Image (cartoon, rainbow, N blue to C red; front, side):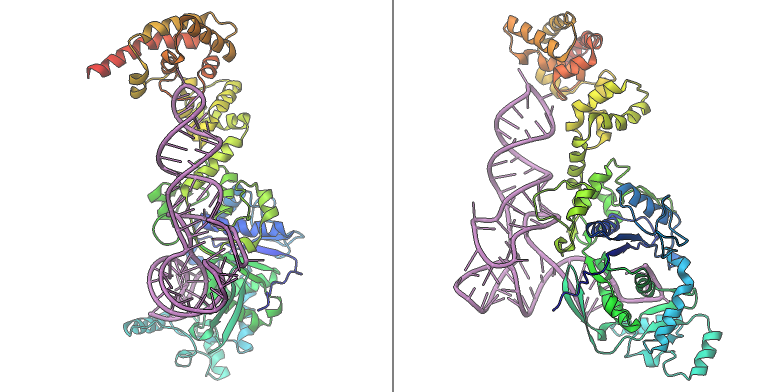
Length: 532
RNA sequence: GGUCUGUUCAUCUAAGGGUUAGGAUUCAAGAUUUUCAUUCUUGCCAUAGGGGUUCGAAUCCCCUACAGACUACCA
């Protein structure tokens, strides 16, 4: 079998979502692979909105798609204007405008009519009730109803109708459709860039509706083929759910006489649930506590779905994680910028099987990106969170704190739990730590230690460290005798960065205050635990 | 039910006829940090099952099982 990939063509790919709700992460991955493919081969990445089903349109969905792509850094070359709006009028950069199919409405009918004239399609006048009845009858007989060559001559169609009768019917009836006349028994040989050769016999396929008189709109299949042709799409990279309609699309290209220049196809496997069976759905996120959407989504019904952005993921981490779900470069590198991905991406290395999404790995990616950010950048992100709590401190201090805690965090949102004691004195003490580190002799030692620290000048990490160790050596005490107790006074728990980092950042006054205030409280607290 | 697609550690995956089947995440243990986390080391854990082809199969072929998608005047 020859590989029908047409390498000589200029690469033009499209992401063509339907604005029927929030774009879920599987959709983002499809957009990403298209974008990466275009960049890898110096091609053009086009955004096209497939809104041919007015009944399923959801307000805000189109805007959501655009915002999601924007957040991810997946920038279309064509179809979206510089101010991130769908291009509606043609110009040099957007020669095929409009890029919203509802606005291309007048264009499609002639193509459907051409097919009728050429004998590849026909008019069908069956009512919804008739079709329903057929389906119910077939179901009752234990079969499924297929509108194809076995049945089409018994249906209400133009196939055996005199031409003038057809004309009259087209004018008097407003609910007819144009159906593709599926060949009876042909093996359609197809090629998929990811899956290889596929053959399907047309006997199991049906006469798909291409165009509807009722709303004068094409169905997906017609609009898709016509627009891909008009927009000179070279590669169609889309989800696996489209694989079953690939034979129809091949046949459509053939019927139009466009086979020689039809695009190459690549079908991406689906994203699966983290547990159990089936494809990833909105419900999984709710059940397992992770987002399935890039951005938070407020449905018109009022339901809120969480988003990666709002959950504190960095877009780079989200994109990196998504890229490695079903693709890998063949090396052991796992962390990639968008530019690196664009340089490495190829369809040959896309995995055939479905990828089960793993929330743990997603968190790990975010942690990696968090660690790699500069302290100053993180401080910029942390400051608003502090301000919300009414805390106004210098950027220097926030930056220093970020430097000390970033290795301990996965999200910026973790920062407060990890560093509140730098800004407000601890209000509670970890009971286990108190039991472990607070001994009868501790209060006396801690008071002595406070005196030692108050004499240190300048109050730096190094100087305080030296002074404490000198005192320890002088008294012939092991460090364990006071270090953790001191930490307890300052932090409230047995955790956090190095004790002298904390001491120097807190400052002499605050350290003295916390030791004198808390030594007694902890002693009482501890005896409370003993007595209970 | 029918059609198509898929199946390597729990999860993401590498290995395009010859390796002790490799890496990452998770989990566990140890080291480091007298804390916690990081880091490092180690460990646990896989070719769905059965037949072929071959000197040799995760890899090629067939069957079975399982999984998924599709089966609308939705996309």
